[in-house]
Length: 392
Image (cartoon, rainbow, N blue to C red; front, top):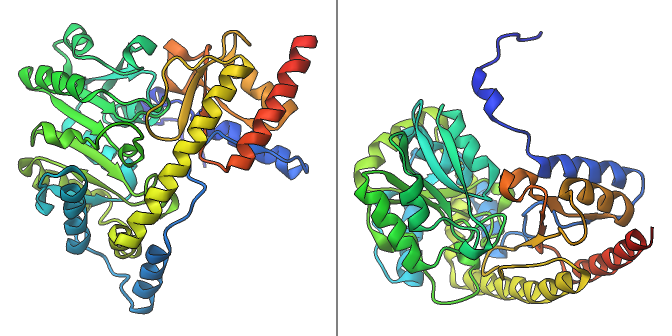
């Protein structure tokens, strides 16, 4: 069966090139090649033992029925307590909606706030799926070039300058994928003030907030109850395939988003939710903090190595597990460069192509969510590859 009249919105959603490189790498592996993966942003750690035990127990106890669309009360309360413990402020559990991953949280937020013709401001570079969530509801992402002088992030001045009659809000990420850089708290406050003055919405993706390596813990939720925050169990909590996240909303938005969640998802996985409660046990948090320290150790190794090889890292990543590196001294086409690197060196890096036109040809993203041994082997392979490339 073929469909000739596909929805026009599909024209505004591009393929995810990270996944396409993954397919190429898989094909090479099937041919017997050893590939080092530093493309997809997925922790090499798995769920904490207490989390796995909680999931096993939930299944043994038959706790596999639907939950409320807003999530298990125990999990919402645990998330609320986590905000108090880490950030020192109270977030009512009633403001928290548990979702099927951060992707579902972003989808629900956009479903509630974006309509046909809505314009949403985002930095260029930024995570590609964010602009596609907006496009799914017939809005448009207005990408604003945000270079290293701005930490690859929007500033309040940019928001003020680019706001138009069609603009409804901003969608930010701090720390960011692909850059690993955060918006400084004082600048984020200025952005929120500008948006608030224009009666728009501010959505902040904080899925990497737990993996911030510099300064005191900070969440945009401290800037007012009108700020909408997305978070996830995938990154800091190492639960990518469990598809569990959450959304913090103003109280007035909760019933509207709950209605959407009931219809679009019914609920997040009940087993994942029961397991998620165990993420906040002291022994689990202690383990996550050890793993966070390991990510920082990897960052502190790989950034100087990249610069030694001829890449330029104009902003030290302060969070997540990415390095956004300028490769223009080595190649004038990051896409062709990464494909050649994969085929000749067996190393997967990602070109800037996915993340917006401003950095598409000059930048590559490296994920250091792999073992130190793999990082060291990748550096050796890249050094040999670049030497051969230079000699050719």
